[in-house]
Length: 162
Image (tube, rainbow, N blue to C red; front, top):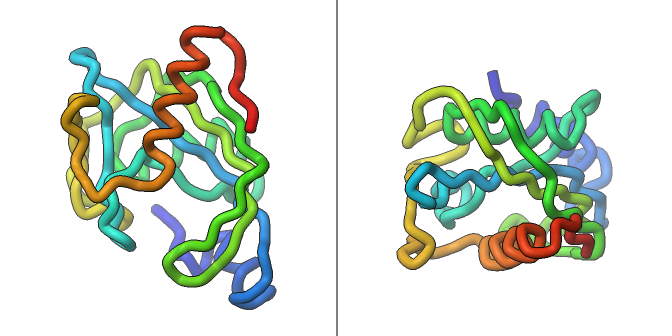
């Protein structure tokens, strides 16, 4: 069962620090393509942007476990094989709630998974597989960079670090 925002580690930290200070957001993304090369996207329930499944790490989790959990919570799919391809530490952003975070985030490409795609979950209002030349909008601001970094990783074989 997914934690509520207030129950999550990040939610507890934000509540204790307040809304104005910048805090670390440690988390993971899961990039998934099906056998036709279509990208899995969710439409987030909080801002209705189309995004890669992602979220914050909980205490005791590894980055990989976070990616697996977030994919499952947001899509009903359980990653069974995944590889890290990008690591981000230099970005600071302010979300729609006015909370500012410095990201410590790892992106994973998922090679295989189990389960059936759920189009709606507690964290998403829709989900689906989309050709790269026909992605829906409005898109998450990180989507283009995440896909470009995966291309760099696939070409170079080296972890992208920013």
